[in-house]
Length: 184
Image 1 (tube, rainbow, N blue to C red):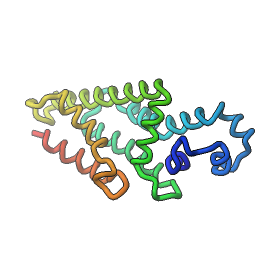
Image 2 (cartoon, rainbow, N blue to C red):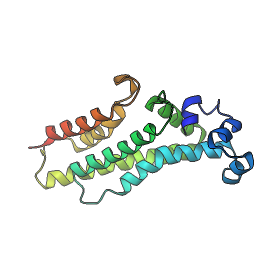
Image 3 (cartoon, helix red, strand yellow):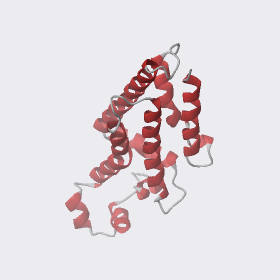
Image 4 (cartoon, rainbow, N blue to C red):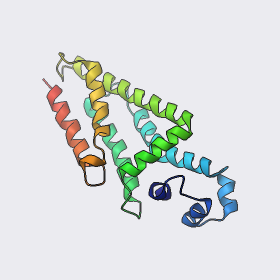
């Protein structure tokens, strides 16, 4: 993943991958059909699986605080992945560019990402309704709009707002402050 993030998919050769992984070509092809298969696997592992696992952990009776914690855990997983890279020039912008390329190359992956995004919006909606029924937040809010706003919090902190990396501290603070606005 680090090599793809640094050089891009198009500029990464099988030889580059062999050297980075310290394995022979035969071993690489034993586990992956071709470079496209390896790239798809990397994208799924680093982007889709963490979000899917996070969303699967949400219970039916989850409230807003539970959802905030779930999404912060998910974001932390991404942050920890980026911190394992030796090359500190790699940031969330590199990663996002790769994911967009993967969506273009693998339409099924794009559909899966869209399903995950819709699931996230649905879970925020359920959490908001849960907290409304429990009397924890105001009833005069547009549940649909607020669920979208919660979803947009993490996607709005791109590299343009920080030096070169998504500012994970701002995400945490924004969830908390937005939640405060909803409380009675």
